[in-house]
Amino acid sequence: MDYVRRHIEPMLDESLRAFRVVVLHGARQSGKTTLARQLVQRRGGTYVTLDDDATRLAAIDDPVAYLSGLQAPAVVDEVHLGGDRVVRAVKRLVDDSDVRGRFLLTGSTNFLSVPAISESLAGRARILRLFPFTQAEIDGRAAIDLAGWFDDCEINAPHETDDRAQYMGRLCRGGFPEAASLTPEQRQGWYGSYLETVIQRDITELGDIRRAEALVDLVRWLAANTAAELNAEAACRQLGIDRSTFNHYFAWLRTVFMINSVPAWSRKHAARAVRRPKSHFADTGMAAALLGVNAEALASPASTIAGPLLESFVTNELARHTAESAGARIHHLRDYDSHEVDIVLERADGTVAAIEVKATGSPSENHLKPLRWLRDRLDRTAPGLFRVGVLLHTGPHCHRVGDRLWLAPINALWHSQPQIR
Image (tube, rainbow, N blue to C red; front, side, top):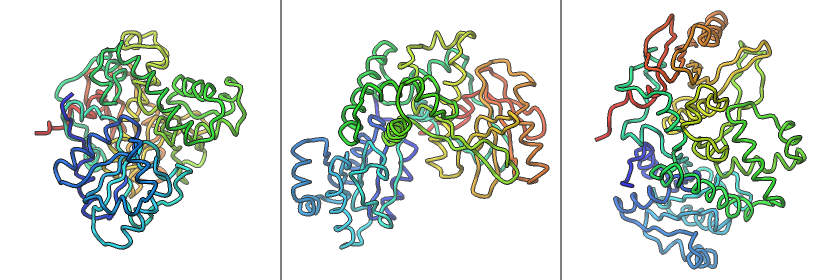
């Protein structure tokens, strides 16, 4: 497919101007290599990948000599395969020079979580995460402007609306660039191969994984339980594994960016909040493929998995935008009195935007109850913090439904934004 401009590009350019090293990590096949090559094409420099055996051996054999010969900005792709030896050489070289943008390091594992890399490059590097495509990137639109939600308490109507079947099609397509252009049948095979590659190359080789089949079972269990609070005891019981194995495997799935963990939101005015995080499959296309469901099945009102997958789809969209803009942190909320809010966005100043996600095209008054509850509670205990509550749904309606409460189509997240020229 043609090159798709990524929303992170301005932040990447700014980081290379300000830092000696920039680390760009993210899931395998999320577009890091394409973006890195595009950067070298625009700015000059050198691109090498440690995924190539000969290059990796040369870099590991004498990393200082090898890396010092690369023209800046030097892109070292899949840097985690070089381990601590290569990263420590980067540290030594940048400590001997104040050149900004000397290295761009990319990797398919979380740079701060790989056991083989003990050097964090603290004080020398900026770490950025590249997610798979957002819907706005696929449609050639600007990133969502969440400031309008917080500052103006306004939701812009989308230029056009999707229906439930179209949303489920987007959900099943997912965001991986390679998979986005495939047919649904081809995509099913692509995701199967992707899972095998990640488990065999990025987890089994780097981690102490003794039961790869149990890891696959855990991946499928997490897909079936996406958008739910993480219940390790239930997983261990159903999969026949112990808690330490679960913790070890789950940590690795987060390290390779397959699972996003959304923390519970809690403040002094929400003291009865349950503290367990929610687990979201990081790409709903992969989750749907693992569960064997397609857009047609999910479009049926009888589907029981459509709602959780749609919540993960929206959560992932917001996580990608908030990570790129660094304007808000994403949480969920449930208290011991059974009040739940799917998504709570909190800015550094403490103000919040609350979001509910429903697969229905005809939202009812009952669907607004969680948003009204949180608004009223915060108005009593912390006036001014609650900025807006939005019920995102699969229908066409976009309008205010009360004090700081809105109904809006899900694609208001991207179709209300201008196209990128």
